[in-house]
Amino acid sequence: MLQAEQSVLRKYYYPVMPVTDLNEGPKPITMFGEPVVVWLDEQGKPAAAIDRCCHRTAKLSLGATRNGCIVCPYHGWTFNRDGKCTFFPQSELEDPPKVYKIKAYRCEEKYGYVWIALDEPLAGIPDFSRYGDPEIRQIHQFHETIRCSALRLMENSFDTAHIAFVHHNTFGNNQDPVPPEFRIVPNELGFEMFYEVRVTNKLNKDVKAINVDSDETVRSVRAAWFMPFVRQLDMTYPTGLVHSIVTCATPIDNESCILIQFVFRNDTEADVPAATIIAFDRAVVDEDMLILESTEANIPLDLKLRLETHMHADKPGIVMREMLLKLFDEHGEKEVLPRLRTPQLYKTEVLERA
Ligand code: FES
Ligand code: CO
Image (tube, rainbow, N blue to C red):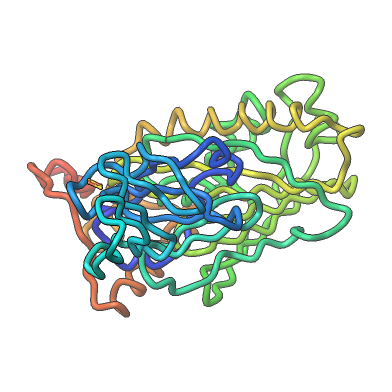
């Protein structure tokens, strides 16, 4: 799959930045290869449109905002959040012609982030459990560009077999490589996965205060996949501590995405400072990214192509592939594959010995 070429994927909301990033003015981003400008409207709500003026194609994100509209830096044409040109400084006498308009996108704020859907959305912004609970605090963790595809990040988030290897310096145990049993329950938005996993405390003494109440403990996990590229990993420890991570991958192009991560916790700043929690998850995410950025971005969804091999613990990633193929099929779309120059090289058949 070439993630930026699958047009049905544009029909979902994706987070792109913390809304506070817009306080300094309009910001450019790229989603699915499309240049997008994001700014705050008159009510302080985020708005988004194509980052290309309909006049001479200048980047609107180089301009400023006035009365909640985006003003082109080249000749001052001014567009509202619906993409309509509301002011045209070259003529004070006439209203701007109707053809002076730019493509505007659905754009909303939720959980403190700007969410954008490039086309008519098939689903709302996901509802995360824990949100809104007065006992729960929300901590912003990461907003950065990563050089891997969104589905690689998603399947990794549900891959229990990598913990013992990739995370053996933080919470995994490479002497304990057999992944736990798990249960996957599909729903109309994706699926939920349930399991319990033993974790250890390797990082440093502070980790005890964060995620692990002894050198070894058990996480009870309810992991939710929201198609296509959002997951909530809700972890509860025997102490009652909840560490519930939301990880979102917003495709920039075929090889990279915007990573947004935040966490819900049922403790307080006095119990564990936010900076300590962020530092722990930073170490974990860095371990994942080192490996993920080494993988090929263009995941073949169609298992019949046999471009990858699989094992039991890959089930969540396989269900993702199947559900995405079904989504494409329902929208009359085919999987777009990269052109493999030497397809035979990628085949995973084992040669029979004579
Ligand atoms: Fe935008 Fe001329 S290019 S107003
Ligand atoms: Co990991």
